[in-house]
Image (cartoon, rainbow, N blue to C red; front, side):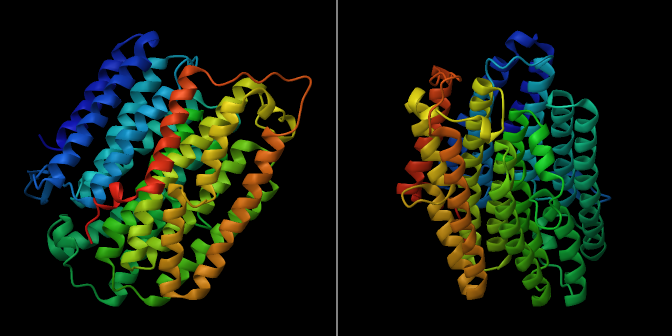
Length: 467
């Protein structure tokens, strides 16, 4: 058994979901995602035992393109993140009344197929195809099932599409140039290309436009908050939990190995932009009164730190980026799910209209607090492991980087705890907040167990890394 089976099952599941009726669509999608989660765990066991679970087949000879889906420590970690988060995201959406649900869940599975392909592909052109394929389903998910005024939602999603698609064209141009030098799109060949510093600079910047938009990195972030806010919760969780990791993964997989001899001035500039984004997003989050928008900017601050660590180019930064990608994936899915639960009870994302939840729903409050603590990097949670490693990596590069990036911890703790105080504590005589349902209990329990379990014993994940 090799990794190709995961891609095939996602495609078959998407077709089966599309052919089903809306009543059974979520169940089929959930079963498909659970099957792939189990297969991914089996592949992990085989990989750790030394079995080759990759797949490589020549696709074309002119141009030289291979269907190369390679499993190593980095790609396997991201595959696990995708396959394990997807059933959580789908289960979280159960009992939500979506029109044409079969089409929605088919798009969700197709998006998972594209994201998994992006993480596994080690042929540049095949990787690019999967990268672009992942954009289509999330565009339609946000456009057709998002919230708010249709005209506004259409404007937001088209802006998102144009931003990400246009940035990706620069990456395609970089691959085309590299092919002209090497005669191959294979990762192993591209990383051996002898680039001058000038060539490396241009290749690096071309990749940065694609990845900086996807992550997003300041000042390429302007699409993010509106897109997160207008997308349905299932779309927001896919975007923030998995899709933006494609950009950070690609820094580690493609950008840095290929253009590693880029000018140090460019690297320093990019790291500074990431740190500016951390502080900028944190300050915007401080003033945000809409819960979903606050979480969007909080996510931007966190991924800015991950990107900064990835770009410093040392082993510690690599390790910290991978750890925090996984931690952030579970944290942000949990936070947006909590926001969705509150919205369904109170019919608002405005923090000023909330309050009185703790007295009515102590279990929900406990779950919320655990996920919030992981978000601000409290010791004992997985978020602490990642943030500490990233800040240490930045300090190895330049102590000022770590100092300024570290402000995200202080600011993040302030605005998250302030939000929790206003949204959850206090009393209310007019609004009723029901305790968590069985489905909500299961989803939140899984997320909290992962965040605490890996916070106490991160070796379960870090054993997968190859340095």
